Structures are given as C-alpha cells and as structure tokens.
Image 1 (cartoon, rainbow, N blue to C red):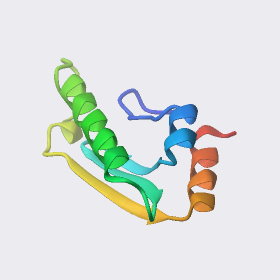
Image 2 (cartoon, rainbow, N blue to C red):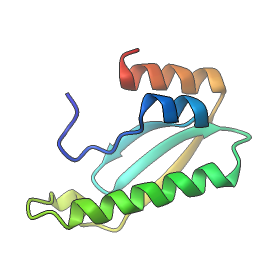
Image 3 (cartoon, rainbow, N blue to C red):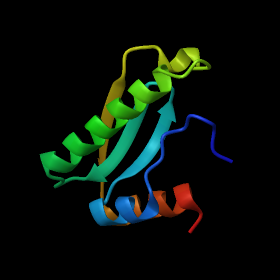
Length: 92
C-alpha cells in the first residue's frame, strides 16, 4: 500500500512520457527518464512535484520529511528499464 502522502504518477502518464519514480522520501524524489529525454518533460515533472509539495505542506498533519527543501533528481535509463520500473510501481 502506498503511503498517505506518497507522490505518484498515473500509469498512463508514465507510459506516455516514459518517466517513472525510482524513490521518494518526503521532499526528495528521484525520477527515471530516458537518456534522450527532452527538457520539457523534466520541467513538467519538477513543477508537478513542487506543486504537490506545496499541497502537502499546507496540510495540518504534514510529516516533517516534507518540510525540508525539495531535492529533485533525474536518473537516466533505457526505455526498457523505465517500462520495468513502471510495471513495478503499478504492479501491471
């Protein structure tokens, strides 16, 4: 089961944009994208996560791990490796 404030990408978004989440812990997140990925997808992922953090931080029961400065990391992999990660995330 996913945690209450765990950031998630929908399977459709992940497959279409070839992006997955490797790890997230509070305000830290590591996205997996293809080697050749355009800056626009990374920009959208970064903005989306930052907006999500703003939402979580506005909640009265916001965990301490979300109150730290955000750290957004992009790791690079082949499309096949990304598809495997998407399947692992969503148990497809």
